[in-house]
Length: 309
Image (cartoon, rainbow, N blue to C red; front, side):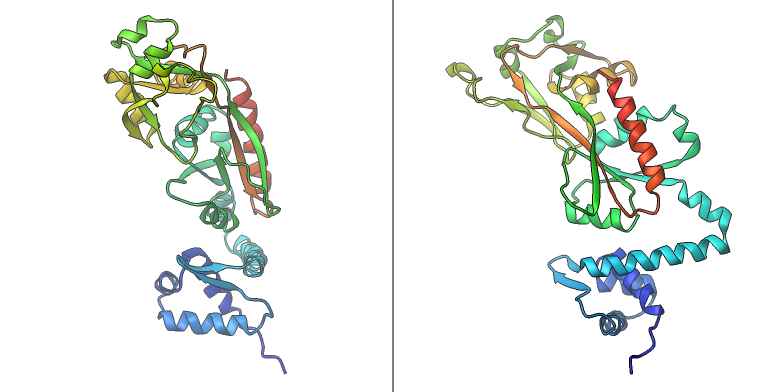
């Protein structure tokens, strides 16, 4: 005779998936790690498929575990709705966007004056130092609702659509930089200058398509890097105050110059130089509890991006 299912085990499942390992889950539940392990073993006894795989970073839930967790979460949400409908409604309108500095300072700024900010409460969750597996977990758990990145994700559980692209690039420099007087840089100007490099998970660090560029021996060296940062505003600030230059998408440069009032000059890059196009994608879990809100926000982001050149 099969034992009656203990629904308290779902609390343990939820805690372990959210926390990522038994130790953190035990602290969240205020029990010992041994008690959590025993509960997982009991839960496993009700299913024929493995629920967790032990890895270097802790316990990774299997597809079966995520499926079980999602279904129970939908029931829990319905119960919460009957107990506190006003609080639940407010929670439903909270949207967490996962991304890097461009997401926070550029995309969220685009919708700041839009009616979406009256309808939704937005929060930014940094994708810094997070791999795709971690980001998938955050989206599946509804801890984050939308991911914005240059990565096209091929996964049947997720929807991933293009919202923007950076195909036109420029060089920015401070007003006091001698290069600011030039309408366009030569290859010599570009490669002799010290560069500030933006290094982030939502931006490709290697932009220049240089297969046909270095025919002349004088330009075979890479850019001279004087500063690296994963902060977009930090990078533009140091360019503004020093003799450094930076290669960046024209859309971003125009936005920070005109909207954020940075004291920078936009100069055309060398005509011989080709720069890789960067595509930006919005990604979300197909079974998210906030799917209608997500689709509305992504559509708005795509619409606004098409008007920025």
